[in-house]
View 1 (cartoon, rainbow, N blue to C red):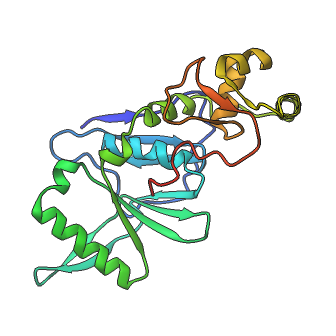
View 2: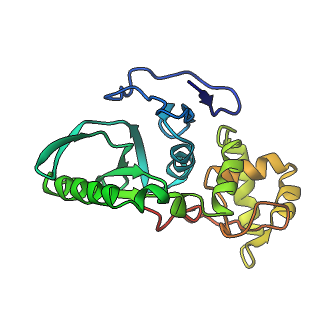
View 3: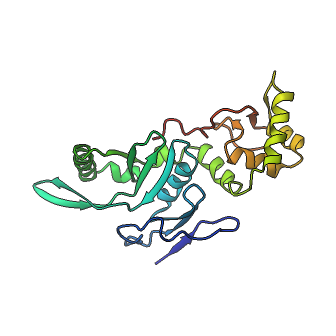
Length: 236
């Protein structure tokens, strides 16, 4: 049984009491990787059962509309082919508008199967009757590049503290470049004195950028205060 721990930088502790999955994260037959994602947003380790779920967690971590993430959140019963069946979602999300969203992560090759399609449709219908919003996402939506690669790079800087002094320095730059707030990332890093500081501001949503372009010194960034979506506006 394989384990994988996705972690970068110092971890500040595991909040064991914040969420208990209804079933333990397990490795399916065939040796799929299982492990834990160190979420800054939730302040705890989030379990995943496959690498596609791990990639989805990067998107959930950076999605501004997602406030909380719970894996294996509850057990749910639905009817299919005259039988009652049990289902445990991959993730339940709390969104910024106060609503809840249940997410199922499935490879497209699995979703192409008739029996899987019938199962997902039956689950969606049953959840709708209970007041749940249900969404299925595959690698088509999750692994869009360069967005996913950008988020994986930026995640390394999400723990870097955005200090009051750094924000003051950013506001000075905003005033100086008010008439033309767009510049290359390399130029922005030079003005701050450090690429690490520039990446920390990007990772923590203080500076907007073109999510359809790969991270690099020639990436166009905009140094004004507006909500940063990281290209995740329409994926949920």
